[in-house]
Image (cartoon, rainbow, N blue to C red; front, top):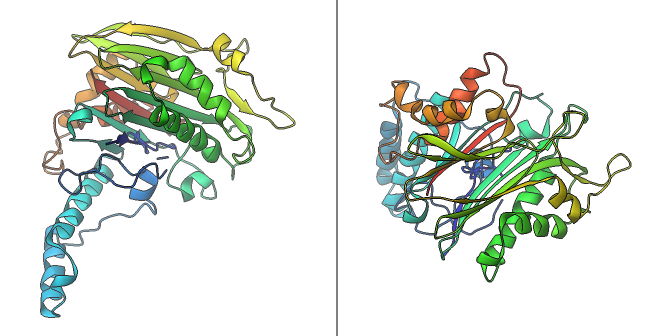
Length: 369
């Protein structure tokens, strides 16, 4: 049985989610589980499929429940009620409430109420883009994030961020970032013994196996973390993403980011005439790698550069309660547990802290160990 939380923040969700290919966190599985008791396959679809056309629920004087009830009544009148199962209408209501809530906050989120990921969440907010950007057409950008849990208790956090400032306005690196995220998740899923794959090795193998012929050329940074069942954590970070471990509200471990002499973050690049494919040795040479020992109740925060740029670690931790303080109780879906709003709160706080047009995609993943 697989558990996959995507925020295909492309970003987001995460799956993203916890992400798109927070977002939004790719068809890596056959089922979906964003709302409990709809189906029990332990996978999240990418945000791109949930919000493919940026569809918006419009009340226009009627709440969603009234609209669904009217539809059910009409189907009954037409003797078509047998065509749809009752839980299908309940699913529409649940998904509709979730979309209304996310639209109200302005942040995409994904969370799971399955036991293995019930204390986790991910969220994503994309920066403003030109209308002809591929990201606007796919409802995603260049942060791709995932949170994946295996049946044997291992978890993997992944944040891939593309850098396309040098590209024309109508181009981005969605395809490349998506391919790298998919490859790392596939490697994790297929590993016979995940204990033998610390974060650095997983990152190296995913990069080595990446098909360099299909993705568009370009560069991205990568943060990958493995959380073992005994709460041992390995982290490999190449670029400007950030991850920290909190205990009793205090930051006890964190990454720092890896930077070139010109002040730009280190990146992995697919070859073009301008960019050379970097070797596996380069991944080890320029990445920062950590081994942390966590305890029950510790909290792991992983964010993309867009969040870390505007919030300190202490602000990130405090902002996990942001959504609860916005007075949106009537919009919060009833089945949202206390963990489901944490990543969303961080991204919302980062968006507010930007104090103007958002300059970068923003992704956050929160896991209570």
